[in-house]
Image 1 (tube, rainbow over the protein chains, first blue to last red):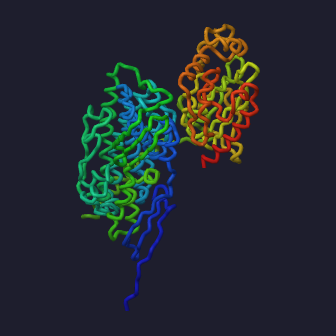
Image 2: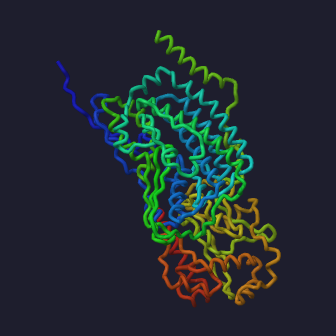
Image 3: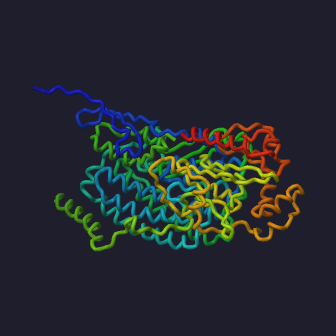
Length: 369
Length: 251
């Protein structure tokens, strides 16, 4: 006699530990198989865009820190870039180098955190400690430079807020050397591990055409085999001066998304080392263009976009010639990746859903803003 | 075959973690041991006192209040008989401070700093709203670099600045030449209120203070010009209401 079964609707979240923030997934389950996923967003909406409309331009930067707190530097950078485009400000060369160093360090820190928390979501605890240990080296560099460990408020309109302290360069080189060495450990822990492979290989495949159609960007897109990186395709700042590769994977499964980030760490280490060398050649000590405290860009609009560790991060500013922006709009990579989640979850186990969600590396504040 | 390979790979992973056997922990036992904090570390906001006189460096210029993105700082002042500003209270709401450091950057007089201190947990939320005295007390032992360069020379000398200012300068040792210059500068480019939650400023008031020694637009609630000259009572009221609106908005 066959038992009658029926589908069951379950709420996963909003306070589920693997959702990294507050994201609610409405699952339609058939036994342990996920038939349908529906992400429900908005639990972390803090209306940062609206708050920024009531702040002066320099005051918006601490707000932008909080849009995507894992890579605050890139949020600072994208806002500063948009404001600089509005007011046509030239950034000093030294500041550009410092910005690139900080952005890439932050990308490494973000990917190391990804490495740790993804492994922990899938059930391996050790990588979490490894990832966070090396991330600490980078966070210390940030704290030394700008005084804060997470919300930096470092990249400003027209430059950066502080020059690096003298001990920064040797410490940064040392950190890059250590992380470069530890990469072998990271891969040794997981890449060949049979449990890890069983949990990640051929799970949650995102095809390239789907990824493009849903506007997915960043490492998730590149893991699906699309070679698209704004640092190469639309070089901003001084990224055209550096020699680095854009790593690409083939399958677009969970494993590829994981390995994609590790490959990107290697490339970022290359960029940081080149930027540190380049910084030595810059004679001008100026780190900030002259920007009035009452920064008033002329009326107009500007869009800036950069490649951060979660894809394309863009900011659209409209100025009406006053001290406060008329409209601030942010485009975060996490939003599109979260929307593409149902595509990857055809008939997967609930545990695999957690793995897929983790490798998307979604930061909920960036989704809701 | 596959099983042997899997076992080998598992052991390889264990080997990596096994390398840590016998090595020291990289963490510290927090309350007893502490990591060294970098010099630039941004902790709690403190008010700095003059190294010699022990008085507050703050001149109640309100630049920090205007720079603060969250409205955590409220500077209250009165005017004495010479229309000189006297700081009456400096309130910092630590519950809404976001430690961005914009106040420290905006300050021209080394009046406040984000110190390297970070331990200020309390039982009640109300205890986190610190007034001038508490901020000064916490900031007593904070080392800082005095940005007021001409401090020594300025106090007794009448500066060749606007004539109406001269009497004030003599009386107030803290109001230095630089400060006067800075004020003059501010006069040139008026600063608006940074925070939306502050009182909507009447437009004519913006122009008014340009004739005074006072920066433009700093007291939106101060009312008409005469009240501002005669006493600080109305200002006090204005500040209070501002404080309320701010807290409301920050939620």
